[in-house]
Length: 199
Ligand SMILES: [Fe+2]
Ligand SMILES: [Fe+2]
Image 1: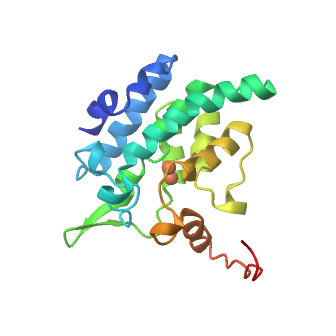
Image 2: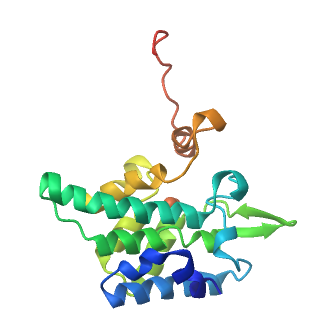
């Protein structure tokens, strides 16, 4: 059961001070695990079926990176700009923002594939409200996919989490299509040609 692996996979879960948020994290993973029981090992779920775990790390690694960077980001904003963000909200959001991928990624002819048209951010936010997350966290989840105009963040926390998401994925131009290029393509955006002398 995926929700039973959370404490081992994510030691930072224990840093969430509000027990209701910790419980909601477990409830959300229980919910998605029951929706699609083919996923039995948190460390074997990819960030996307097109990104093999062996090369790009697991979805769990993506989440661990977000937890680690959140622990630096939140105090940095307080120290440098006196902007108070909730570390509890960042940690909880990191832990569940991609959980609906468990529902999205299904098996077809022995291979893992993404369900076409499935919006894991939107679905994840809906589940988050059902399991008791506050609206602020549900909003962070629903806009995290960095899809441009359709996903404008309305809060500082949502904006920062949106930027944090692609930072925590080693998908770089040296390896093929970069995270930026993938986002552009997913949004059917065509970038104008760069100047010839661009370094
Ligand atoms: Fe995502
Ligand atoms: Fe993500």
